[in-house]
Amino acid sequence: MSFSDFSIKFGREGHQGKALSAGITYGIIKPLYAFRTGNTLDLDLGFDAGFVAVNSEKFVFNRADNCYTRTKQGSWKVVPFPMPTAARVGFVYRFGSYPITKKYRWRYDADAQYQYRIDSIANQRVVDAINKHNRDSVESVIYKEFWQVYDSVAVVNSAKADSMRIVNAKLKAEADRKQAEADRLKAVEAQKEKERLKAEKKNKDKKAEEKPEPTEGAEATEPNGTTEPTGEQTPVEGEAPAEGETPTEGGTPTEEQQTPAEEISTSQPTTSQPTASQPSAEPGKEASDE
Figure (tube, rainbow, N blue to C red):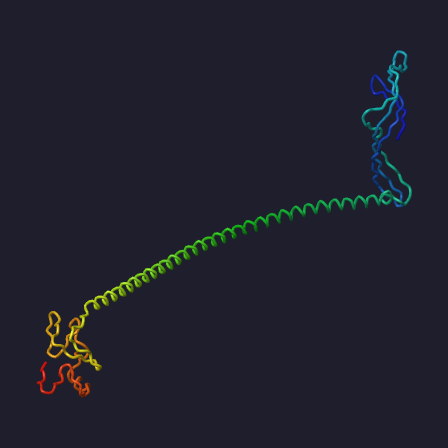
C-alpha cells in the first residue's frame, strides 16, 4: 500500500492532488560484484501496480501573471482499472558477509526442485508418448501379421474341410453304390431261388401226374425189391422194351438194369426165390421163356 502527493504537468494543463494505492510489487535483486570483505553490489529492479483512489484537480500556467490558475476542483474517486504506481531501477551496496545469493538460497533451491520436477514430468510425458507410439506401431505390425496368418490358416482349413467333405461324399456315394449292387444281387439270387423252388415244385407235380396207376392182377412187390412180371407191359413211346425188362417211367432204366451182367452175376446171391427174368416153374408145366 502507498500514499502519494503529486503534481504533474507535461503539457499546457497539469494535475495535482493526493492518491492511495493497493497492489503488488514485483522485482529482482541481482548480485553484480562481491568484494573481498564480503560486501556486495546488487542491482535492484522493481515494478508496482494496483488499484488507486485519487483526488486530483487541474491547473494551467498563466504567463501574464506568472502563476498557476486552478481550472477544475477535484474529488475522491477510484480508478476502474489497475494502474502502475511505481517503477524502479537501483544499485544497492550491501554490507556484510551474508550475500543476497545466500540469503535467498532456499528460494533458489525450491525453484530448482520445482523446475526439476516440471522437467521430469515433461520428460516422462515425452518418454510415454514415444513408448506409446512404439507400442502402437509394434502392436499394429503384430496385429496385421496375425490376421494375415490367421486368414491364410482359415483359408487352408476351409479348403481342407471342403476337400474332406468332397472325399467323404465320394466315399459315401461309393458305399451306397456297393450297397445298392449288393441289394440288387441279393434280390436276383432270391428271385432265382424262388424260380428254382417253383420249377422243382412244378416238376414234382408233373411227375406225380405222369406216374402210371397199378393194373388189376399185377403181382405185389417182393421183399427183395423185385416184381413179378405181368402179362402185359406198356412200352414207352419211341422205345421198345427189352425182353425180360420192366420199363421204368420216362424210359429210363433202373439202377439194377444199368448194372453190367458181370456185376449182377457176382453180386446177386443165389436164392431159391424166382427172379423177374426167370420165373419159377410149377410142377407139371413148362418154364416160360419170358
